[in-house]
Amino acid sequence: AQKVTQAQTEISVVEKEDVTLDCVYETRDTTYYLFWYKQPPSGELVFLIRRNSFDEQNEISGRYSWNFQKSTSSFNFTITASQVVDSAVYFCALSMLRTSYGKLTFGQGTILTVHP
Amino acid sequence: EAQVTQNPRYLITVTGKKLTVTCSQNMNHEYMSWYRQDPGLGLRQIYYSMNVEVTDKGDVPEGYKVSRKEKRNFPLILESPSPNQTSLYFCASSSWTEAFFGQGTRLTVV
Image (cartoon, each protein chain N blue to C red):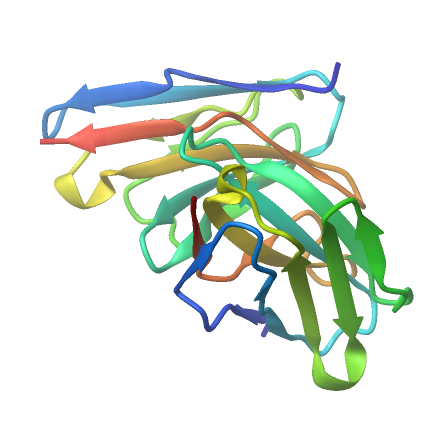
């Protein structure tokens, strides 16, 4: 069975601090995708990144960066120089193409609050 | 523009009164699904459909029905809603590599 764990329920930081959101996953499949979504207070799910299981390169997009490590089954998300607009719930998710095409298994979510 | 449209966005209803939440996608995706989001539990899959007339239960199907008569539409039906179905609902449309979500429906059952 597949599982995604986001152990940090809530994180509170002050603006300009760096913050890392942890994501650990479990799967027996060798082919899978990992996702991060942002859910701002307005409620919609905003896609941030998708990474496939064969690509362990880290990715940077502006202030956002992702660290994928298959050896530890982790896909962590770092926000550099956080801003108040980063306040949201962040979800990590896993999709196994071979055994459950189309289904996303989500973590519990991490509530990030960035204070001015 | 790729879009998943679900309606209504907000709904307050009473216990036992049948309701339908609609979902439509314009990407010609075969796979569509419904999720519910509850605090501390993340999003959990309710039902999914791999094509027209092909539907199956997800992780939390009790109390829900779906239908897929057309590729673009995948409505979620609550025949007799109960307060424990108060939640935030998302419809999703997926390909092999990406998932698009609707804007969400916040349902309150009193």
